[in-house]
Image (cartoon, rainbow, N blue to C red; front, side, top):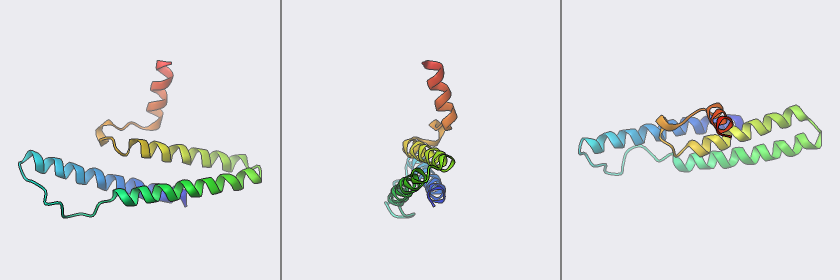
Length: 110
């Protein structure tokens, strides 16, 4: 479930980005937004994120109880991707880099 919620959150992030780009484009053309139009997706994005993290915590507890290292590794991977998604959600899409690019930069600067 957490994986699916993360994918839905990514779709919401794309909608947020598209709406922000539309507003920027309208502002450069001198048109003011009336504040109406498409619904805001940020609240739903945050709700899905919280639900996904709670489900990952529950899965981690189950995998730890049964000493299932493969399942626990999947939980850690999905948790890290969820955190990365959240950390980059406020960045403009042109500034986002995939997680491996962040890791490569941190290794080369160390």
